[in-house]
Image (cartoon, rainbow, N blue to C red; front, side):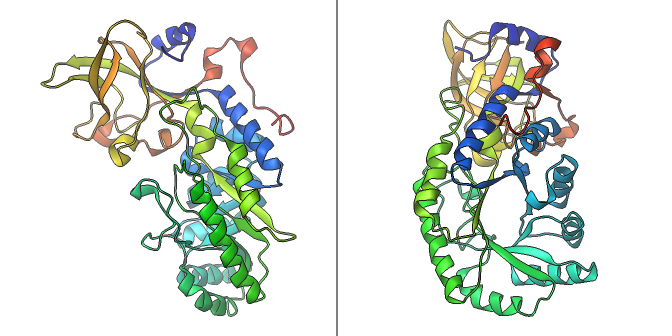
Length: 402
């Protein structure tokens, strides 16, 4: 059965494909749930713009009271333009350019999450040249496995991210000589699409050890940024449309040592926006193969690269025909690459040219990673409000309503 009502599917039929569709009501419900559970413990949540930087999506996230987690100078600019408070913008990234650092300084952001001694030196120099004091958090590598795909794990010593434990003595000595830097926190991030919460328990234990080291050296740490990485259910997007924020935040409350005056920060992206997004495509051709038939769509890896890049799974639905006999299809796109495939041997209702196909859970790392490869045009985004009558159009809620 398709999860899209017929009246909505009928409206999709008259909309040029492919396109991204965002369910704003689900986004609002997700934000309310997250804020409720984070609020129990006074946690600060920054939304990771790298997951989805669509302006309409950002408007609603900003209105909910979240901060912004940025990994480029342009993301810092987008966050500021979207109304995120400067003192709730954090800037991470292993390779910040001088221009990007200056963008952060100009916007008076909450902190630079720094990943090397050399980066600290550069930020100090640039801050001095602009008569500013740069707030920094040290991104420490906890050497904790996230038990996720090797391309999206970030917390191991073999990864390019973060400062290793054996560098700490040198870092602290160097900080004493940097006059235009103020240490305000520690930052951690172990990976993405983490569904085994025990990985976060391991992170908490490691953070507690780091905290003890800094306390032994009489260094006050006012902010702990534990990163993000909370995964979603790609297989059952309707059954688990909102992740279990209660268990996630409760785990940190139970296992993370938080000292008086400390604030705990999170950087969540996928868990906020993934399930509200769907890539809608149209079947161009059904091509008979040797072992399976090919369902050739007008969307490709230019609109959703995750399956080609990570061998990631996305649920695929025929929303024009949800019943009757089924066949197996390799669901592929039109791009001139053999890796342009959304799913192998997918069991779907018998499909014909012109049927609409929904590729689910694409609100994160879908539109934001799209490209013009093969000189394809970037496709449009539509929102649930676009398909409602004017009297029912959804408006962003006020911060108090979230």
